[in-house]
Structures are given as structure tokens and as C-alpha cells.
Amino acid sequence: MSSRVVITGLGIVSPIGIGVEPFWKTALEGRSGVSAIPSFGDFPMESYRSRVAGRVVNFHPEEFLDDKYATRVDRYAQFGLVSTKEALQDSGIQMDKIQTQRVGVSVGAGMGGMVMGEREITQLYENSKPHRVHPNFIPTITLNSASGILALAYGAKGPNITISTACSSSVHALGQAFTWIRNGKADVVITVCADSSITPLVFAGFCSLRALSTSYNDSPAQASRPFDSGRDGFVMGEGAGTLILESLRHAKRRRAKIYGEVVGYAATSEAYHMVVPREDGSDIARTISLALEDAKLRPAQVDYVNAHATSTLVGDEVEVKGLRQVFKTRANKLLINATKSLIGHTLGAAGAIGAIASTLSLKTGLIHPTINYENPDPECALPGISTKVQESRVKVALLNAFGFGSNNAVLVLKRFR
Image 1 (cartoon, rainbow, N blue to C red):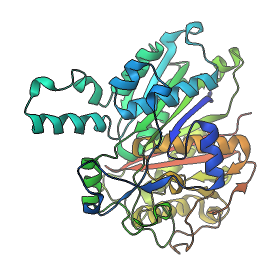
Image 2 (image 1 turned 60 degrees about the vertical axis):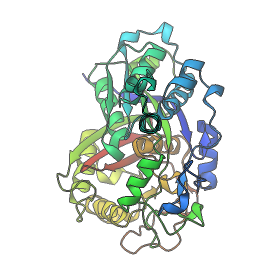
Image 3 (image 1 turned 90 degrees about the horizontal axis):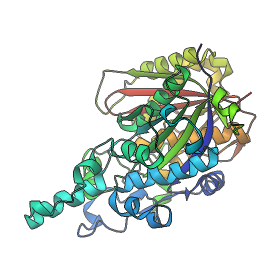
Image 4 (image 1 turned 30 degrees about the vertical axis):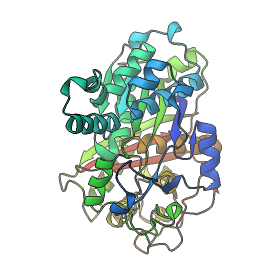
């Protein structure tokens, strides 16, 4: 018999707050965390087409972490450690009182240890001293560095995996955690999704791809504008989100508080293009339908969608096409928001941060606003997108994530009963 899977802990590091409480307060206020990038050291920002990002400012790892983690691991892993520390405290789990062989770690990461990677490769070529490369360089930049570090930090001896599917990494990581617990392979899964790739090389790469917003360098807070006719590309962000997923039986046994329930998941490939979604939205619609089928729910039962909504010309329009295909006239009744309007696109962390926002909406009945939605694009406009807080007793939430490489993932969350 499959296990029900519930959410018992949340933790976040984001451009609008370190910690769930400040993040949620700022999200409901509709305040942007996007700002101008001051510089990349010797690289003048004037040489970049885009010069804005959703950065985590005033982050001092030594305030949260022991010295070995504050100084010896990459920034993205530090974000993951900090969000996980909060989520475990929030969950009330005491690792020394549960069976750690039944505790898994599922990490979603788009780029991995790019901060240290770029630093070390630059120093190697500038100084020509291969013997001075950091001794932890290899285990720190591998994509599974965060999952290994987290397992070591908390003694989690269950299944351990890192999933890297670009922008859909974190929803795949959540889906894998959900599957492990539902199938009885774990009682608890620490699901951590993190990225910190606002570096000279990665930022230059996205600029060269012409994927980033360039029209709002003088007004950064307006740059991320999903579904708006003035959108011209996404805004890079950074951060981390951790959700503690747990079997209902295990959570009840320890009398845990429960935020909500994960009830469905689907993952597909469009096998179409590395960076552009199929224009008719059919594969997005197929993924949503499969996720609802997995959840044993009908489209008519969905109340709210936390959209992928990156603020790109094609992506936003295609996502709305997919929603209209699945929900038909009910698409006009869905409550929809775009967390990326507030913080930019945090790549491998995006889905987890969206999942936290969705979980809080299930719990509080509040849907945070989509900011900068000033002139709705007729191809994207749906009545449920609002620049104001919306209130509703949400019962079923849909979380969308679509990544480079034709990767689609959808998670279905439900109010816990």
C-alpha cells in the first residue's frame, strides 16, 4: 500500500528574505528583490547587456554555519545548508531520535559550485600554479556536493541523489522525494534545491544566449515581469529552498505539524529543442494532465497555479496555452501567480521556492501578487493573475517547472485533511 506524503518543514534563502517568515511577509507586500549588480570585480558591468539580478544580499555564512561549512564549501551549498537548518528546526525532527537509514536527501541543482569553479580556474590560468588549486576543488564543484555535504551534516543514511535538469531541477527533486516515500523507500526526505550562479562567466553565457532582460537596467525592480507585454527576458536569481517531506504515518507518530500534502507528480521530455518549448503548449498540457492523473484529481478540482512564468516572450505564452488546453474555460477561474516576478529566476532553486510559496498559500489562504503585471499580454492574460494579494481557501495547487533540454515537471499539492 502506498504512503501518503506530507510537508512538515520549510526553509528558505532568497533575494527577498533569509528565512520563511521574512520571505513570506515581503512576498505578500509585493516587494522586488531584484537589484543592479554593482560589479564583477575587474569586469565593468557596462560590458554586459543585462546588469540586474535577484541577489541574496547581506548573506554571511558564518552567522548560520560552523566554520568548516562557512569557509570550505561553495555558496550554493551554503544556501542549501542554511535553508535546511531552518526546515529541520521547523519540522521538529530530531535526527538522533529517528531511524537515519530511512532519511533520504534529494537535491535539485542547475549549475552547482560555479562560484568556486570560476574562482579556481581563473587563478590557475592567471598564476600558472597548479599546485595551488584548492584541495577541495573537485568534491566542492561536483553537482552532488550539496547532497553529500547535507547527508554528512545530518547523518542521513537513506537514498541520496542530485538531480540537474536546469530550471526544472527542483520539481524533479521534489518528485523523486515524493516517489521514494510513497513507495516505502524512505520515511523522511530532506529535499533541498539551490543555485548560486551569478558569476562573470555564467552571466555572460546567458547574456550571449540573449535570454536575459536588458530593457530595465536602470529600473531593476521592474525587470522581471511575467505575462506582461513589456517582458523581454528573464532575470537571473539565486537562493535555496528546503522542504521536509515525510510519510503521514511517520509524521503522525511524532505528532508533527503538517503544512500540506504532496499528491501527484509527472515528468516528461518534449524532445524538441534545448532552450525553446514547443510552441503549441501540447507537451506542457500533457505533463499537467499526467500529474493530475497521478494525483487522482480532475482539472475542475485545481484552485491555484504557481506558474513557471520566467518572463520570457515565448515561455510565458506557451505555458498559458498549456493551461488553457487542460483547464479549458476553467482556466479563467484559476488563481495564478509568478514567484519569479519577485526574485527573478533562481534556476535549480526555482521550483522549491515556488513550492514553499504554494505550501504557504495552502496553509494561509493567501496568494502573493505577481508584480510588474501592468500591461497584460493578450496571449498570456488570464483573470486569475493579479498584482494584489488574493484570498481563497485553496484546496489543490499546481506547481509548474519547465527547463532547458526539453524537461517538464509538474507537482500537485493539496490542503491536508
